[in-house]
Length: 79
Image 1 (tube, rainbow, N blue to C red):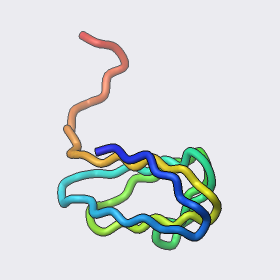
Image 2 (cartoon, rainbow, N blue to C red):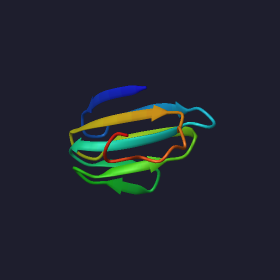
Image 3 (cartoon, one colour):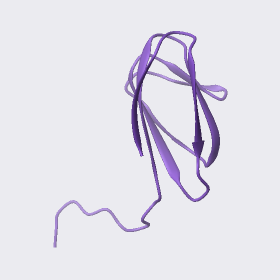
Image 4 (cartoon, rainbow, N blue to C red):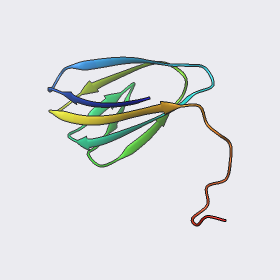
């Protein structure tokens, strides 16, 4: 799944990451609070399954990507 989200300062968004899935958050603009950590602009964070709350500490834009890990090596070039 892929969500491109804009949040005004002080606004929150809630997501449920399914058991077995992984999620990646990328702060494209602004700063976000995730649990007790701040995610600054142009930084990414991996989260664990379960309830996820994101709060904008400034006006922000965030990409939220979730999915089932494929557990395969990542290769730079094809076969």
